[in-house]
Length: 623
Image 1 (cartoon, rainbow, N blue to C red):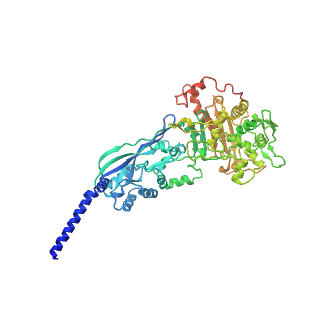
Image 2 (cartoon, one colour):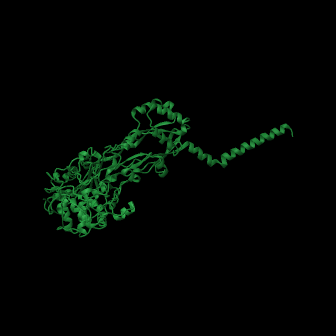
Image 3 (cartoon, one colour):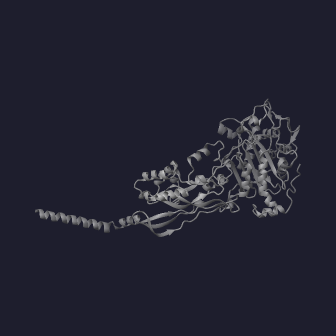
């Protein structure tokens, strides 16, 4: 074969190969390459929905959305990603945690999607980046809505906060729902109602050029905003409770007796929730985390405290229910109590005692420990446990907020299962005055007090009023089987705690226009040896007693129940919890009782009912 023929055959073969390849591209694989071409030209961009607002019962915003500028990087447009990141660090302040989050989110980003590096840019940072834009190819500054909490720390423990989605959350969330969204509810209501608040993501198809810049929008589907939440919370009452606690460590919870709605839930100290939205600095977070005052700790639902004497009305009802005591039952009070065949003396807080013989009414009014030692011993720990459990103690209340703790309501079974030990009679005496193993949260105390006001009908507390159905707000499984007379005996004694001449909270009764039923309590933090006296000044501040107070009012038509715990408030013999609760009760009730009220009351029907007849009518005499 001549060389010419060979050359012609080679050329023909090449031509046939070219024709085949052309045919393959244009006909056989036409759809595939058309699709890939469109993907390079047309991009789907997610449009984040507006997060639902959170408002108090008067429509005051507790969580809203505000415009914010975000620095983002499009990795497909950047040749040297690490070089660009280094350049940005030189220009503006970027935390190491921001860089780590950015690198984590790169793995989940769509093509040509800007991955956020830093949120909430300042005007100065925007100006610096704008001047250097020509050297920062692939770097974008975009506008979006960011969560904002107008009151900062005032509602941080209740409302909670949103934060940047971390790697663990990325692996758990529905990625389609969170397209275009970089934040998620972390704690509080923001976490509990994440599905409602989030909304539905929107999309738009855009045409881009070879550099990834948008040329035009082809079509779009608008995002659906999240659902707004209306709370039972009353901002005015909540702020009064917060201010009343002041610099003290503690918690106050106020709950509506009829609905179970939480009117105020304060834990101090607190923190500025806004700092978590765009990424709290390592320094600030370390300060909060390592502070001995635990500002990140929601004492209202996570703090567990001995209830002290605040539960004596419940224990008195237990004694009446089981027939262990009645209105004629009295104990001899010498300032101390002994178990049979035991030389140990269990002392009363009042060393000289409360008189030779003490009955139920005086025992509650003056908080006589000796009476309740005898009552608890005769009841036994298991009957004390079973009755108290019906007031919501020893279990979560069901409040619509995460991280609630259950407290401890001890029993023989509990100790055997948890500690592997038998129960001892002396431990029953400690439980009878709210000490020993017994622990409650401030929320549990408020719920138990509301159940007292409802004469045994249980109630489930709620923060959110709407749009969540109120059918889940209250549960009334059954009513305790105490007689009306027995209920009245205990409630009358609680009234005299505040209004009686010898009541332990009589100091707050001055100039009251309504009647309060209340009970003081003191909880030991450290044990005091037998024969020694409690001396607050000799103890370190954090070893001093906790002070507690529970109350509901008005007595004959209860509208609100309040519980307060002041950590290490036992600096002196003064009652420190009751005045705080009085301030909260006044803030809630006085607008209902005052004709010139501005109308911002909890319930206008409540106001009408209260003004229709005198407060305290038909509810026993006050001593």
